Image (tube, rainbow, N blue to C red; front, side, top):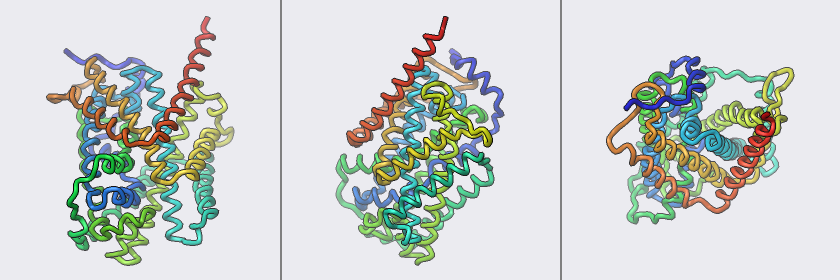
Length: 443
């Protein structure tokens, strides 16, 4: 039986877009979105909990991500609308659940950018020690947010050239670190005899997942992907292989050169590792790479994520004031300022690890909705044109993915769930108040 087509209205709108993104471009986009500032600091945090067994956490994350990516690939081959994971959830469950997925994305982005600004401040402080004091740290964060708010309100334009430069600038130090560092690994530093406990492994995985997420951002332009039924799965798996290989190599080099001391450098473990075999030049290279990667992420995030606040204000989920447009620069100034202010407060009140886990709880809940949506799309035989991605035993994958998500989430604290739940509750109240308001206007 042929698949049931997705909703006509969004399909017609997306048909106006040019489908020009192929496997190489989408793969590069996913890799660029996934490899960010987190990998410059996370190796120390993972080693702190697992010691020499830290690479095992990367393997567990990779296995979990295979399940998640398979669900995204199945859903993406059936819903080829712009919006990525949010479009998959909305087609499967309707507007309200799709709205919640959008809220979870917003919370994910907010926690992520606040955590990355912490990395940025730490890197700057290590390179320029006089900026490392508590007051100067606040000033650095304020200057980063304030400068990017000013730029974006004035109407900054994205350029493919700029994105390419930032991608190369953040990947090049990591590749130099891997290629040079492999010759200085001490095998004894990688040896471990005892299998880690479930709690320590789970705690490491829920933190490490921060370094693996990003595919959901890269899949947003699904309406512009050529033959998504083939391109999305191939790009997603290829990007995951590349990313996992780079991450494991990074951990092996850091672990193999610093050994048990790796956990003692939470702010810049890769820079300290590089100093062992490349001297001060290597340390500076990795600090600069971490700073550029962090700044590139924050720049991109401040450009895009505030648009969700603008959209919520435009659609009535938030007061219309949040959809204000600057009269001269035609930019969503109130949304940009609001988003940056919230991120600034989070940056001041949490460490990178706390903010990473908060972001991960939100993104894993969003993944949970997507995996459930995948199962429903398959059950309903929904299709977006073209042959959907299928294989034997396909219906088992969403169930396995959901089990994996629940296991990872079980290692989050009550604090992260409380914050996420409070945000979803407030968002739901605003959504239903808006729905009642619209109904009251109907004749």
